[in-house]
Image (cartoon, rainbow, N blue to C red; front, side):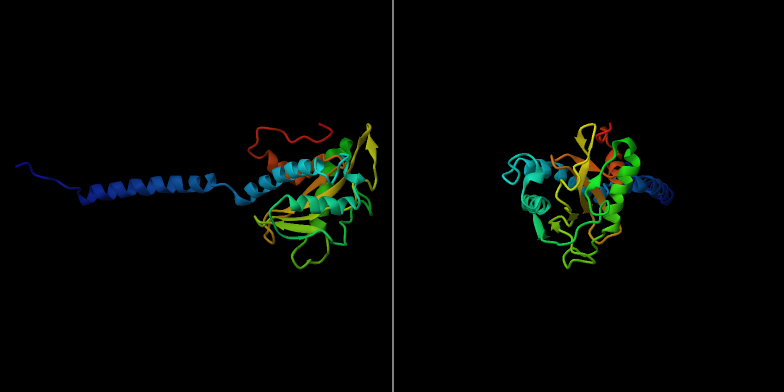
Length: 221
């Protein structure tokens, strides 16, 4: 009969030590590899904005392909936009507008894009909606999608200024997107032009470029 030999205590301790070292190495890597929920929701919101704006532009709301041609253009856009999404709350009847450029639409300056897009970001920081359902500190047009993302702004009527640079209109309605509701993440700013062109603030540009192979373009690039 051949003697059967099990693990000795020393061998078992060595195996456990090796497993502990491997776990210590792999655990941080696993956490780092896990996707950031806010970043996933942000990118989802960005592409949702792009797709839905295109759909709105091709809808009966804007038969001429110009959002400034509709009656109450900004309110129409808010309703048309929210109707295409799964919203759990909307109030496009808000009577207050973001205070952009002293009462005019946001103007994007291609010659100084960094400063201009930082300014775009500032409108969504200053116009924070802490509780969109009850109105918070203001009564901006707003809605909340089923994924918990807050959308607000939709200010002005896409033609408040009509400024042109190199024969291109550079005035935009501002839309703010907060991916974690009342969490700690600041809102992201987007500008939508009367023809559906979307630009992003510098903070959103930074998030979009992280891990991306493509470059986020604006009119000056």
